Image 1 (cartoon, helix red, strand yellow):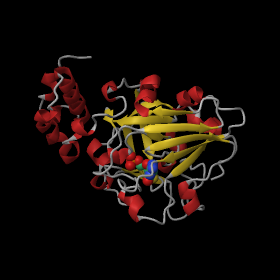
Image 2: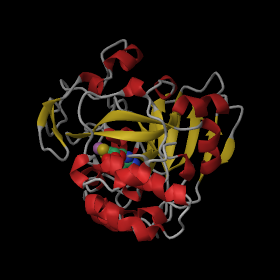
Image 3: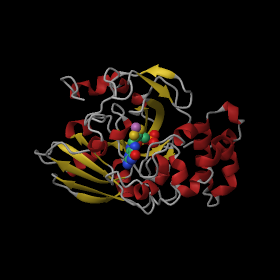
Image 4: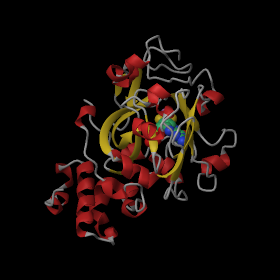
Amino acid sequence: MRIDVPQSWELPAGSITPERAYLDRRRFIGLLGLAGAGLLTAAGASVHGALARDEDDAYAGAPGFDLYPAPRNARFAVERPLTNEREAGRYCNFYEFTSSKDVFRFVDDYRPYPFTVEVAGLCDHPQVWDLDALVRQFGVEERVYRHRCVEAWSMVVPWTGFEFRKLIAASAPRSNATHVRLTSLLRPKEMPGQEMMHWYKWPYYEGLRLDEAMNELAFFTTGIYGHPLPKQHGAPWRLVLPWKYGYKGPKAIVKIEFVDKQPRTFWNDLHALEYGFHSNVNPTRPHPRWSQASERVLDTGERISTKLYNGYEAQVAALYPRTDPE
Ligand SMILES: Nc1nc2c(c(=O)[nH]1)N[C@H]1C(S)=C(S)[C@@H](COP(=O)(O)O)O[C@H]1N2
Ligand SMILES: [Mo]
């Protein structure tokens, strides 16, 4: 760990990136062992604004809290610039809270820590894990991934987490397990969207083939931009599958089951024609209501061409030897 940190957070804001400033501020607070971190928030607030003001308090108790920032794995670099953290944090999808993008305004009552996750179904080691213990067992790294929402917006963000396949190996699935089913948190008292939007089939549920879940890109994440996940990004953890549309990666997962057939999924049950099971990013397959040929980049507003498998063809094409069914 570097110890020349106090100087760098004192640099004029324009000379370093906001992410850098944020990490340095966190390291500095950590170094001093400050309980009253609020004394220092003025420095961060100028670059991060309202979202970050009470982050240090909000993240106390997050799984693997002291493991941040995690070392970045350079194998997953993306050629495009990182999306501005504040913009990414103000344009989210998390229907448990609201169907609008300003999820961050609806999360105050949500208490994501402590958190347990049940691994069950066709495996030799079913277990109820404390999420903090799980994260410590597998360790964390940082990866920069592209993210492409089915609504045709995209971003590039640094996630902190561990590979899905580590958890699969620890669970020892049986030979008849072909798929995994994932279930998100049901807590209507803390999640106003679940309370108000009764036409959805809560809790959110998703599924993958087991070989897709075993791919090295499939990443369970507990953090983003070098700190634990803010609530609107899916605290305390969520799945990230960068070659698929964003909705295939559920947030706030409470259950993972090994099953022997293709699981039903939340969006497919609502609109089967619009949201297929595989949902791989594919610029040549339009959504029934819009083209998927291009995407709007969050923050800059730029329009860029969408890539097959969101640019991850080299890693995942072998999973789909025939033309993708959806
Ligand atoms: N539980 C749950 N997970 C979810 C969603 C949701 O509404 N609920 N939205 C999905 C969609 S459509 C996308 S694009 C991503 C958005 O992640 P972000 O808001 O952190 O950018 O989360 C996905 N995971
Ligand atoms: Mo999405």
